[in-house]
Image 1 (cartoon, rainbow, N blue to C red):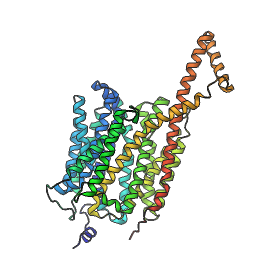
Image 2: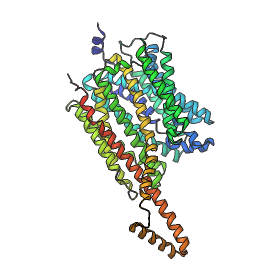
Image 3: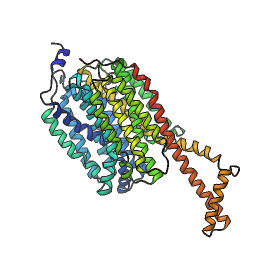
Length: 517
C-alpha cells in the first residue's frame, strides 16, 4: 500500500474536538508567552536591580531559542516519535516557566527563558501539523481558522493579562500562569493524540550539524540586531554593523549548504511548491504588519496619552473581538467562497484599519481606537486563515511537520522585523516631522506669532515678568513641537504599514485555487 493511500485512509481514533483542544492549549500558551512578559520588564528590572536595556534579554533570548529548535522538529520526531516529542516540549516549557517564576536572580531567569523558548518553539509547528493531518482536506479551512484564532488572539491578550497580573499580584505570575495550560495540554495530548502510521520512528540518526550551527548563528545575530538596533542607532553603530554582516553571511551560507547536501536540516526544496512559496511570503508580511500594529498602539497610548501598562494593553482587546468575528466568518465561507478572494479581502481590510489609525490625534478617547482595532483584528484572521489553507493545499501529510516548521521559522523573522520596525519608524519620522514643523515656528508666520503672544500674555497674567513669560512660552511651544512630531511619526508608521500590506495584495492572484472534493 502506497504512502498516499495510507495518508488518505488514516483517521485519528479520538474525536477532532478533543484533538483540537489538546493542541490548541499548547499553541495558545506558547504564543501568549511571546508578549505576556513585555509589560512586566520594568518591574522585573527593578526586582533584580538591572537596567531596562538588560531586561530586554528576557524577551530576546526567548525568541532566539524559540526559532533555533524549529527546523529540528522533523528530526526530533523521527528520533522519539511526534507524540513523545510534543509531550517533552510541553513539559520543558512548563518546568522552565516555573523556574522563571521562582528565579532568585537575573542569570537563572535568563537560563529559564532559554529553555522555555527551546520547549515552546516546536509547539506551533507540531500543533499545526497534527491539526491539518487529523482534519480531512475538505475541512482544512476550519482547522486553519481554529489555529489562526490562537496565534492571533494570544499575543493580543498577552499584554492585557501580563499587565493585570503584574499590577494586582506580582511579575512572578506572568510565568506561573503558563502552568495550568501546560498541565492540561500534557494530559490531553497523552490521552488523545497518536502518531499516524506513515511517520516512522528511526531512532537516533545523523543530523545536519553544519546547517544547525549556521542556523544558530543566523538567528542569534539577526534577533539581537533587530532588538538592539534602535537604541544603538542601527547601522551607524559598529556593533549593529557586525551583527548585520554576520547575519547576512550566515544566512547565505545556510541556504547554500542546505541546497547542497543530501539530507538537509531545512528542506528548502519545498519552496518549489508554488502555493507554499508565495503563501509563506504573504503570510510573513501579514504577520509582520500585524505584530507591528500590536506593538505600536500601547507605545502610542503610553508615551502620548499617559496610559499605564494595563490600560494600554486593554486598548488592544477589541482586536481580539475582531479576530473572533473573522474566525466565524472564514469558517462559514471556507468552502463557499474562493480562498484567494477571502485572503485579498482580509489584506484590504487590514490596510483600511491601519489608515484609520493614521488619523488619530491627542484628543481621542479610548473608544476612538475600538473600531480600527476591530477592523484590523477582523482583517488579520480573514487574511491569515485562507492564506494558510492555500499554503498547505498541496503539501503531503508526511511533509507537513517539516513544512510547518519552516513556515513558522520564516514567520518568526517577519514578526521580529515588524516589531522592531516600530521603534525605527517612530524615531526616524519624529526627526523628519520635527524638521518640517520647526520651519513654521518663526515670527514671520502670523499664526505662530499670534499663538506665541497669546501664551506670553497668559503667563504674564499669572504674575510673570515679560522676560520670564517669553522663556516659559518658548519652552511650552518647544514641548508642543516635540509632542506633535512624535504624534505625526506614529501616524506615519501606520500609513507605512497600510501601504506595505496593500502592496502584497496582487500577489494573492498568483496562488493556485484550491478545489474541494
